[in-house]
Amino acid sequence: MAAGVNGITRWLRLAPVFDLARLRADLDTALAWHWRAHYNDGAHRGGWTSIALRSASGAAADIDARDDAALRASPAPAAAALAERLELLLKG
Image (cartoon, rainbow, N blue to C red):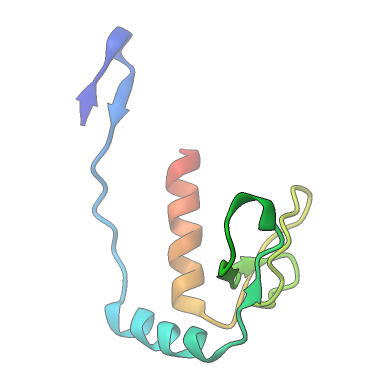
């Protein structure tokens, strides 16, 4: 950890804990899904596809961003759990 100006923490080194075998199994599952073309086609020059690890509906194809929705895990539970833990760490 590094203290910055006025004692504010500038960065933290986190030691993520995850099950590598479960993440690899999730990757195999996710690679078999239909990846949707991303809706923000103005920010890239084609070829950007995505799936959701967490979404409002819990479906991997539900890639729409929603501020007001509670997020549910997609059918890749280990990856979704890791995404949730990282989000909680970032929120503090």
